Length: 344
Ligand code: 6CS
Image (cartoon, rainbow, N blue to C red):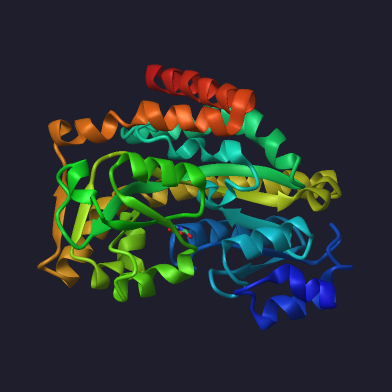
């Protein structure tokens, strides 16, 4: 048990520890109840996906799914560790936090790689060979079955002062998720990147430890981050990607019937979550404006975006330097996938 306590690290709750004590031996495919943790609240995008997955599983199998929203079992890194060790069966962890485990997952932080056009973006996630064939092999090496990746909305920056060019980010301590490529990316944008787990962001903004951070519109609204920030700037540089995984031993040990039910539930939840997000970004920004009329929301013009876009090649190079041939192969394949998605 001492060893078990140690592996949870900071931020793990008593609930996680109690779960571990009772369930390490029970983490088999036979478990009646499957445990699924994610990085957001129940009514946020990851939570909506998880609820749909639960609904499908419970309608089509004799298993039930217990959902653990953000905060109930610790930070993102904690729930990933719990899934790898078999305490949890399912986890949603965004590539923003997977960089240390799977460096290639950082490819999602090359600015302006993902398209802004919604149809192209959705087609890319549905058909990408990099996502559906190459990434699963890398996740498998970490004891994880990659079930799906999906977009959660355009990422915008929040700051205390207006941002019209990289010069405006000079001296701005900008929180990024904990991956080295995001650090490179915000350094290239001119800011001072500060990697932090999600649980520390609101407080750090409130106390002035950081002055900026980035997230999709729905999250800026639902977490009330607008209360501790004055300007939102959208430069079209990224769409927040997330990933849903299962513990690989658990998944491989499922009966064919249960495995098919899991795969089908994932497909249903994927379709549902893309649909759910239609118009969500605009609605969320409008709600923020309503809650805080003095909030400045700036969508930068093509001309204003140009200097941010120019940083993409340097960040791409940094990515290849960090990940070598394997990362380059993923990046090249993603570019091919994107061209194919655009052609549809
Ligand atoms: O910024 C973050 O850390 C969080 N953002 C979102 C949209 N989901 C979960 C993640 O932890």
